[in-house]
Length: 165
Image (cartoon, rainbow, N blue to C red; front, side, top):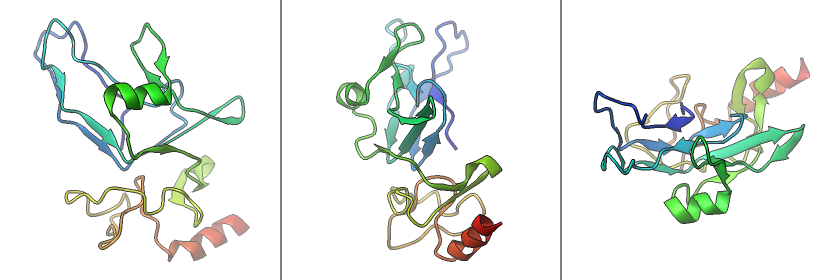
C-alpha cells in the first residue's frame, strides 16, 4: 500500500521524522494531481527527512479521459517536477515506469493483473514481503509483480469468467 506522500510538517513540535521509508513494488494509479510527494529535508531541522527510497514502482494517470504523464510534487506552492527532473535531482525511481497497469476491473475494485499487464514480474524481490494482498505466496526464483496482488497464471480462468459476465 502506498500513501501519496512522505511529508514532514514544518510546524511539527514533537520531533516526528520521515526517515528510512522504502517505497517499492507499488502501482500508483489515478492518484490525482501528483503521483508521489517526498518532502525535501527542511533547512531548519537537518536529518528530519532522510534515507527514503522509491523504486520499482508503476505510475499511471488519466487526465481528460486520456493516459497522462505523471508528475511529482516539488512543494505545495511551487508546482511539480517532470519525470526527468524527479529522477535526475533526487535519484528516485530509477527502475520505475509509467504505463497502464491493466487491472482486471478497477471499477469493480478487482485489481488483479491481466495476462498482458506490464507490472508482471517487474518488482524487486523483498525478503519481508512474502505474500500478496490475498495471502498468496509471492514467487521465488523470479521477480514479483508490482502491486498488492501477485499475478498467478491460475487467475486467467477467473479473469475470463469475470470478463464474460
